[in-house]
Length: 101
Image (cartoon, rainbow, N blue to C red; front, top):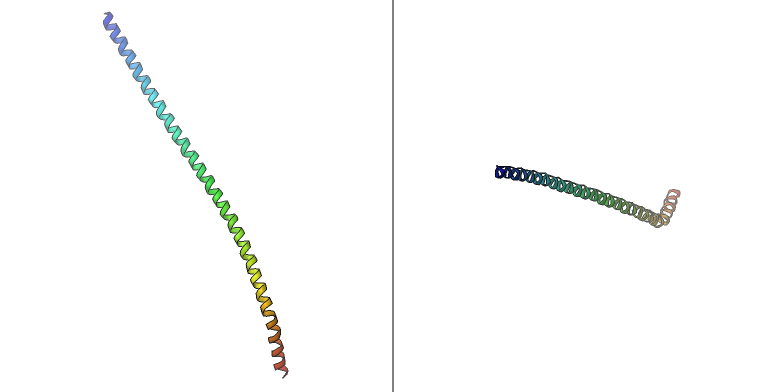
């Protein structure tokens, strides 16, 4: 009788140990899943920040390039005006002389 009682107690303890092990395995699995999810979220956030930083950098570079091109175009227009200004005056004088006749 005592032996049967001890066997049943041992079976009960073994069942409790198994249930505890299952519960612990579920906890560990959930914790691992949460850690992976947190790592994924953090990586996504870092990726988003890197993209935003690159976009801002590209916009800044594009603005600087636009300003440089505007300045260059203005200089070229001024050079063209300077170059053609004297020729226009000469050509206009020739036309006027021709028309006067």
